[in-house]
Amino acid sequence: MHDEELNDIDWKELNWWNELKNNINSIDKLKKYMNFRGDEEEKLREVVANHPMNIPRYYLSLIDQDNPDDPIKKLAFPNKEELTVSGSMGETTQDPYGDDKHNKGNGILHKYPYSALIVATDYCSMYCRHCFRKAIVGLPNDKTVENFQNALKYIKEHKEITNVIISGGDPMLIDTPKLKKMLNGLKEIKHVNYVRIGTRTPVVYPLRFFDDELMDYLKEFNKVKTLYIPTHFNHINEITEISKEAVLRIREAGITVNNQAVFLKGVNDSAEDIEELMNGLTSIGVNPYYLYQCMPVSRVRNHFQVPLSEGINIVDEAKTRLDGYAKRFKFIMGHDIGKIEIIGKVDDKLILKHIHSRPEKPKDASKIRVMELTKNAGWLDDMKEVTI
Image (tube, rainbow, N blue to C red; front, side):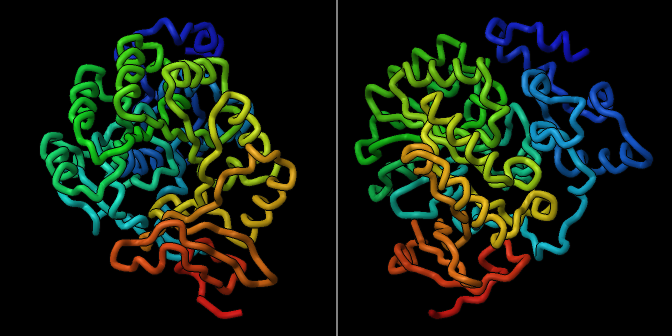
C-alpha cells in the first residue's frame, strides 16, 4: 500500500479491533515500506526474532519515507543496532526498574507502599523500539494477569495502597467488555482513591477512542472512582488531528491526561524538539508530567540514550523557552531505588533529588544526591556520589 492510500483512510471509521490485523508485524510486510541494504534484512530478522515488531498502519502513515532520520520511523522500525547489548554508553540490563524484585504474582508490582501496578497484558498496538519492558512485551511470559480477581484480592488486603496503575503492554488493547470487568472490580475498594491506565494508544492507535462503548464506560467509571490516563507522546509529529480528537474525547469524559515522554537520541534530543513537544501537549490539553532519561535497557541503551552531560543542557535550554504550564515536567530517572529528579548541574557535579524511594529506605524519599558527572555517564550507576 502506498503512502497516498494510507493518507486516504478515515481512521475514525475503522473497527479498531479488526484494524489490528493489518499491522506490520513481520520483515516480509516491512519490505513493502523499507529498502534494505547488504545484510540488513538478515540482521533485522534476528532483531525481530528477539524483540517482535508491531506497527499499526495509522502510525506508519505518520512516517516521512523520504527522510532517513525520520523520528517516527526510529520509534517504530527495528534497527540492527538493537543487536548491540553493551557498548560505549556502559552496561545494560533487562530489568532497570527492578520489576522482578517487586513482582507479587498475578501481575502485581508493588514498589511503593501507596501504589500498586498491574501488568494487565503483554500486548501493545505498537512495539516501541525503546521500550524498557522490551524483554517481555509481545512475548509469552508469566507477567500477564491471568486471574485479575487475585490481583484485586491483593489490593484489597493492602490498605496502604491509595492508587492503582493498570499497565502492560497496553491495557487499552484489551477488548472493552473485559476491560470493563477488570475496572469494575476496583470501584468498590474504598482505600483506592484513584486509578491510572497507562497507555500509548492515543498516540499510536487513536482510533481506539472512537469506540463509544469504551468512552461511555470510562466516563461512568470516572464519576465513581477518579481516573487518570498517563500517555506517551515523544515527538511533535505524533500530535495529529486524529490524536488531538482522541485526547479531546478522553477529556470530555472528565479524565485528566498526563504525558510521560522518554528522552531519546535521534528522536527528541534537541531543545527545539522538547520545546515543540511540550508546547504541542499543552495546546491539546495534555499535561507535561515526566521526561524520562532513557533507561540502560539491553538492546536500547546504546542507540537511544543521551549522555546526561548533554541531556541536562538540552532540557535546561528548552525550559528557558517554555511558559509555566509547558515547563512543569520533571526530568527524571526511573531507577530501581526509586524515581529520581535530575535537577541540574554545577560545573562537573550533577544534582539529583529523590521523588519516591523504596519502602525499605523511607528516609531516601526526599534525599539530595550529588554525583560526579563524566562525559559518557547516562545513568545513576555510571557516576560516583560526591560531596560539595
